Length: 431
Ligand code: AMP
Ligand code: GLY
Image 1 (cartoon, rainbow, N blue to C red):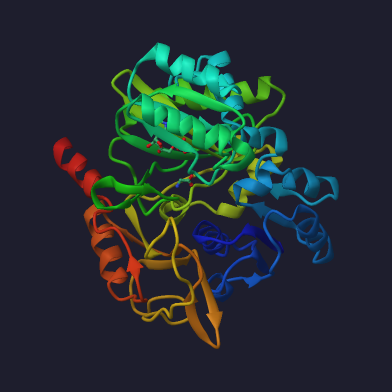
Image 2: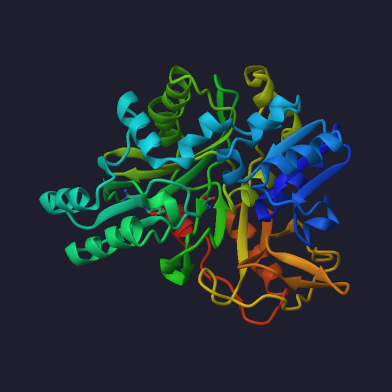
């Protein structure tokens, strides 16, 4: 099969590397891709959000299958547009992508179908939102912009002045763009967070190995929220008992709810969960693989990714095996100093040969923001590289990932030094 992957970050690189293991994978392309992805796939510089240009390119190159990996093209209906010209694609259609693209949609879905989540109200009037927040008088309070906001449209406000400033920022100053015309005001939940990515064909859901993201920019979960500074898999808090409860109370009810609403979800459905004292609850749904969750989950996949993806598209997931290996994986993100706010680009990256670390066993370097300039690999984004290692257990995977990361350099490199620390503590406590 001739395949196109839409997107251009570490997640897309991880998907490409996994697809290339399939005997059915022929020529593979990435659009727009990036410099480092260029070592593994042919890249074509088309914006992931340019649906028209992407579909025209897919027709011109006669791709057999397209994997739409990024949220915004899914929300814009790229899968529908490809289907309209007869090209099958992995990912939800526009209607199903609302589960991520509109928090109001997903919260209402959960309320209607009794899926556990934080209690909430939605508002399109800033004054009414504040009135409700004051009347509730429960702190902190969580305020979320309705639409896609690159994972940044969530504010946790400790008191009334902070909430006022938050409503001002989202609804009046439109800091997150049009996505802030409506807000969800919700109850603050506590407990360990777990990411569970799952394959689904709209009827059957097969969860992948669980993972844990590290969203804050700095050690000890301080600093600003980012797209993710590192991940580990499996997540030790996600015990078999929790997994069974999530399947019964969250995963299956969600798949059935989407079907009942007339928008069955096909693709990768990401459950962002919090294990609260009252049981697991949904923090958010994403309509795609997580980034950098994909970078630890896919290296542990034993089954053929292309076969599984095709089964999601064709509705044959019930008959398709989805198997993960034992062991663990860890990914450490190497970012540009200043990310997620402002940072410099164009810094030369040293230590890599054709984008990888020669001789480092069980290590893969996924490229998130790199470019090749005058034959040299340079930085070109906030998150630059995701250094992933697999091992027999989490300590082994983490040690290998950090050892590998130590060999890669660029000016103003920033990384967290505590990826997996909390997971290791949880494992110790379970002994
Ligand atoms: P989201 O973009 O919805 O995943 O939110 C980003 C982060 O904000 C989550 O990973 C949580 O750490 C935190 N968060 C979101 N909603 C809540 C909530 N209701 N209670 C506590 N923390 C939350
Ligand atoms: N790492 C979180 C996300 O992909 O949304």
